Image (cartoon, rainbow, N blue to C red; front, top):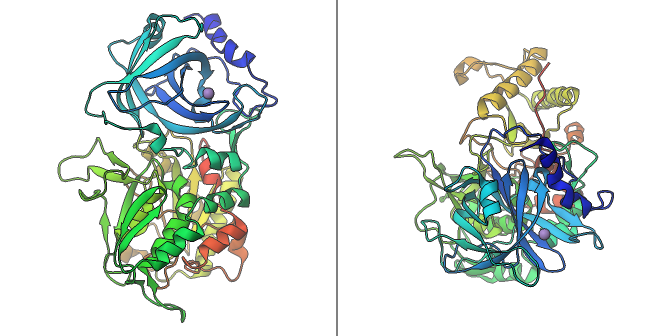
Length: 542
Ligand SMILES: [Mn+2]
C-alpha cells in the first residue's frame, strides 16, 4: 500500500471530530512499518445517543471498526447486527473517557475488552474486509474463540450493515450476554464511574506513550467507594448469622464462618473477624479492582486465620462458581497451575476473601501478554539489622533516582516492615529487561549507602542488611497488591502513600489497618492512581 493511501485512512475519522474539544486521540497516519507483535483488538462500550459496542481490529496500522448495537457475544446461536464505520487510529486502543455532548459520538466510553486477534484463513485481513467476510480468532479477556463478520446486501438505509456471529467452537457459551460483564478491563470502571469522573483522559498535545493521563484524585476514589456496597447491603452483612447468602455487586455470595477471629488482636484493639474482613474487601474492591483486573491473581490463603501458617493458592479450585472470571495459562506444563482467578469483577474478590485469601498478589503482566509486564517493581526488603529509618533512607534515595530519570513511581508500605515502589510502563519490554533496569537502578542507589545494603543471594550471608530485590520482576512472581491486607495481628494493609509521607514521623510500615484504610481513602484519595494511568517507556539508567 502506498504511503499516500495510508495517510488517507484516517481522513473520515479526523474530519468528524474537533480535537480541540474531544479528548479522543487525533491519531497519526500509519508509518508503514509492520508492527512486530500480534495484532490487537479493542471493544469499547460507548454510551452515546444509543448505547453500543465498538469492535475494532488492528489491520495495517489502523483500527477497522464496527458499531455493534447489542454487542458481541460468545453465544453461537445469536446473530448480531454490526455497522461498518470509519477506521480509527491505533491510539484509540486504550481510549476511555467522556466525549463532550454536542461533539461527534458525545457520551462515555470504556475499554470493555482488549487483547490480540488472528485472522483466520487469510493473511490479508484488509482484503477480507473489502471482500465482505472476516474470520477472527479472539484472544481477549472476555471475547475468546472465533468471531465471523459477514457483509449483508446493501439496504435502503445506505449503511454498511454486517452480521456478527460466534462460531460453535470450544469458547462458545450459550446464553452469554455482554451486558453481564459491564466493567472496563483497563480501569475496572463502569461507564457510570467514568462519567462521574473521567479520570483517565487523553491529552492529544502529548506523544501517544504519555498522552493517557490521570486527572484523578479524591473525587475518583469517592466515586469508586460509592460503587461498593450501600448501607442496606452492609446492614444485611451485619445481620447474617455465622453463614449465609449475601447479595453484593450483582452476585449472590455464599459466606461462611463469619464470626471466626481471622486476625489476632493488636494495640489493645480486639481481634478482627471474618465478617469485618469481608466488609473491608467489599468496600475496597472497586478501588483495588483496577490494579487486579485482567491479571492472574495468586492468593495467600490462611483458612485457619492470620496466626497460622498460610500457603499459596494459585489454582482456581473446581468448586469455584462458574461466574468467577478465570484465565487458563497457555504455558502451564503438567503439575503446574493451569487456571488462575482473574478479579475482573468486585464479587470475585469477595469470593476469594471468603475462601480465606487474606493476601492478594497480582501478576505484573496482564493475561493477554503474560510475558510483557506493565509494572517494574522495587522491593526494599529490610534485614534483621535494618531500622525503619534505614528503609526510609533507601526509599528517599529511590525517589531521587526516579526524579533524576524523569520516571513516575509510587510507593506503598508493605504492611510488614518494608516499602515497595511500583513503576508503571507500557507493555512491551520483557522481564529480562525490566529486571535488569530495576537492578541497575537499585545498584546505583545501593552504591550511595553500601553500609545499608547487601547483594548476597543467601539471607544468612546478608549480615542482617536490607536487600533491594529486583528478582520479583519475573513471570508469575508477584508483590502484594495495593490495599491488600497482610496476614498479621491487627489486619495491617499494604497502603499506598504519597512520597511526602516518608517525612511524616508517625508513618509506620504496618500502621494502616483494614479499620482505617477506607476512611483514609475517602479523605485523601488514592495516591497510587498514577500507576494505572502512566504507561511509561523506561529510559536508560545513567
Ligand atoms: Mn461508538
